[in-house]
Length: 431
Image (cartoon, rainbow, N blue to C red; front, side):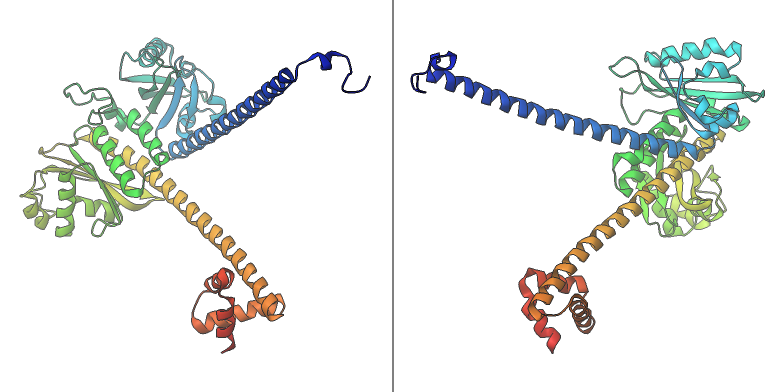
């Protein structure tokens, strides 16, 4: 039989049914295509999140490496997830071998139950902070008395597993870090005004640079964190550059701004001395301190009585000052000074990383501009070669000669040629 009268399965199907089946197949193919696009988009988003996580982790490792105290992160079972070189040095263990080990193997047996209880309570969100004196059993055979402070970076109560941030130090002067935080009214969860311990302060500081804030916002956040961390502080500022003429200033309050301003007007004060001397400066009564007679007179109009100024140093050279203020006389003791010094060290590392990032961004932008300019110049040379019948070297020489004569950059002349003004440029070159 011919095609029109053929028999078989295909010929028995109504045309409408065939068309409908084809339409369904087309829809199914389109749905698959959309699903594939969505899957690709999700994969790209996951890749971006992984890259961001890895970048932030490397950033935090860079910051913690410069601090003189041991910093480490454990999971909800007390296993070490991250650590800095200072901790490895205290324990006499190579840093790679430290990761993945339960921290209890480095503690005296008598301290193990207390640490395990602290891990459980922090992971469950039952306590905000744990502080204790412990005895270390380092792998180098050395026993050392140490001070341990921990907070929950992420509690185990939510979808994410617990991550606990710890600070460890064997410096006897750091015993002040175990002093209880000042008694205050209970603050709502997440209230930025609530006092925090040094472990939480250092953990928060290591996150600052990845927030993408500009320099002034970054300094303002540093000031807020320092105010919460230094036990007796009321107002805080961070100045970058000489206090006499700072490049950047970040503060947490109007009172700190006014206190900074009085020191600038007096051209003297704790901030100036800390910057020029490279050491912390403390005064218990600014209004009567004979070291700064001009400032003492100006300070009578303000609420500040005690000042703690700590230099923020990069590579050993002061680059700014952390200024801590209080309306009380003799407000700042050893704990305030040590916490402020640690915060200043972390702040210096943050600022150094930000400066390096900004330098890389500028370099990238300059390279991109150079590449774009090269492309435009090559296009302009091609236009002149076609119009004038010259080779590439001659076209380039004409652009350079005209650039020097008119004091106009070569890339700007090239852009004029590419944008349709070749005749005007050729005429100008011929004069």
